[in-house]
Length: 150
Image (tube, rainbow, N blue to C red; front, side):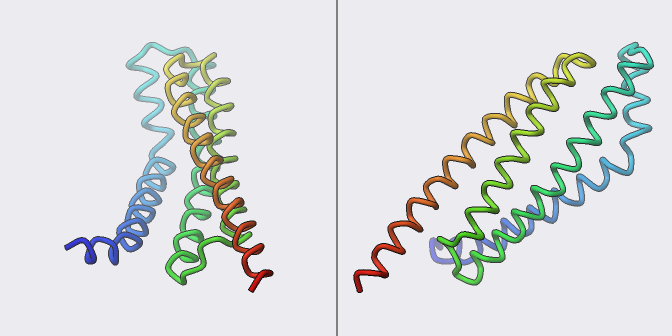
């Protein structure tokens, strides 16, 4: 059972990246009417509604870049390319997308205060992924050093 889970882990991850991409596409396509409905429900003014929508759409850009980087990272792992410069760059791209989305959400708090929760989550994810990227960098440095001694 454990071997089956290990062998399917990358496949499950790729399936989830596709599912998140589909969800993001649905959000992008339905964003304007959803925000219009939500703003009317909450009694938001026109400026707040537009700001709320702008933050969502701009965060979507970071979401697409992040999903593409994750897809490429999973492809590299499937080919057994683990501790590589490209994977480190991809991890740093994911971290940067999370950090920029966090900053954008902090700005979005002027339009909708609960964006603060999204900012905290995105900032925390940026930190985690950045640390994993640093671990990969150390592992790559150690791998290169070991390759020189053989």
